[in-house]
Image (cartoon, rainbow over all chains, first blue to last red; front, side):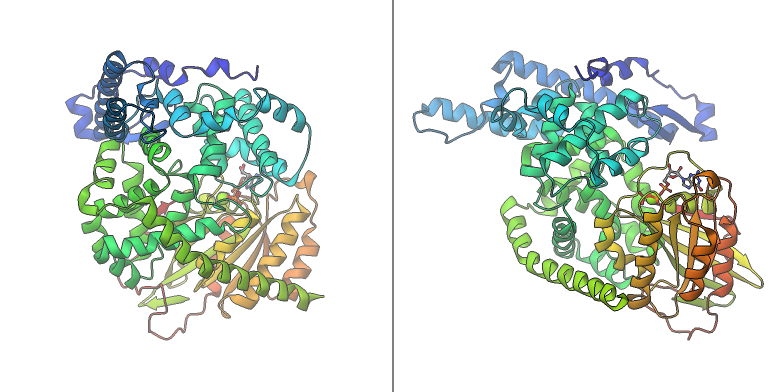
Length: 396
Length: 200
Ligand SMILES: Nc1nc2c(ncn2[C@@H]2O[C@H](COP(=O)(O)OP(=O)(O)OP(=O)(O)O)[C@@H](O)[C@H]2O)c(=O)[nH]1
Ligand SMILES: [Mg+2]
């Protein structure tokens, strides 16, 4: 069809290609840096300890896979689809109870990670992508890609420009086939929602979706559900106003949950959006190692966009002591960047992200916060564009 | 603003310009001496620092490499606020990118720090056969607007160190000793002229 078949089970193929590296004592002493591919084919540069961590993670992924298979054997193949409670009173109470049990089991299980082989299926079902796809004719994606073939717009030009600049060097994404698939998804989406068109950042998100999902079409629907249902509105449209709102909400949250860090950063005049913009727009795809990013996405697709706040807070929280010792914006950025790039064990991050000590947030509180920030953001963006327009008037 | 502490100067520098003009490539060339045929698109901005020795002083640049796509424009003030210097980059093979550069200049003139040292970089100078913007046109524009102008190539390294060096020389030295926002006085020795660190 669209040449995506050959990448089916890509992740699994890689797994078998990667030699398990067992560093010797000598190399440990030398603390050499090695380059190797992770389970999604990304080249990772790390020291011997990082390699060890990744090997442990691989083992944990295997165990987690066994836990999922055991549950399937026990509860049936699609047990996780039957977790919605309260739909229709006709449900017998015993069924309701089992749905509730499933929902609790599922939430815990997902926070511990969805095994890479099951990811496409589970994401597609639980994110709402399957439902979205089912509301349009079967041929929607085919028709869309055919209809837009050969059309040139501002968005398609920018997409073409970014194709080779999206995870360059990746063994599948950075091939003619990979570029073509990514192009169809991004161009297709730019026509589906012309307000979004193409926003830089989506290239990285769509690329990871392509790597995870079994087909290009499913990747497209995941992108659609993400932008249309999961994330806040207008994250990627003209002024990135949604993203501005998220940044402000996050800033307030940091002040509430990590007051010492917030006060210190404030004193350094470090605006958290200096670092968090990329986190929110690429959903960590450019900052965290691939499996860690996807573990975050596992939870985002099931629990919602507020997970981004949990994770962003956790990154700061994990490095509280170090951050409090910084004297300079550059140092703060170095600490944060070193931290994110080396978070090879997803559990290190997610344990902190969902720790009760950080205090629970609900989608509700986040929505309220967003409502509060929106008018201010709109006012600011509006004033800015007026100012810019007035320069152009002066010119004429 | 640039700040001085003994002979060390800290200066915030921002790169602005159209997507794909070569902002990240210029920084990568300056900071690490490398060039990548395909450089990842920048989202938000990336931070780097690099120290240069100029005459009797060292200048530590804190460099903000911003995202070029139009819609990221709304984030730019956060990066150019308080900047001591700016490099506005265009691609000599694209007239659109030159128009974008002019808009940036205009914005900085109205909104930026009035003492900001501004440089205009006509990048990808190695692509002579695809040239769309003449050096003459850009030079005239730069003169009229009080910028200094160089054609650069991140690929061949031509004029890359030079443009940063030239900025370092032009930074005002006689700043009052009080800390302007976002800047910290350094009085420990700079970590050698190629000591670099980067963040994205
Ligand atoms: N031939 C040539 N190519 C260059 C030069 N500088 C950059 N490029 C190429 O142009 C493309 C874009 O360069 P970047 O440095 O990523 O551009 P940017 O301005 O940072 O782009 P955004 O991050 O999207 O705003 C890359 O593929 C570079 O390899 C140059 O001097 N000569
Ligand atoms: Mg860039």
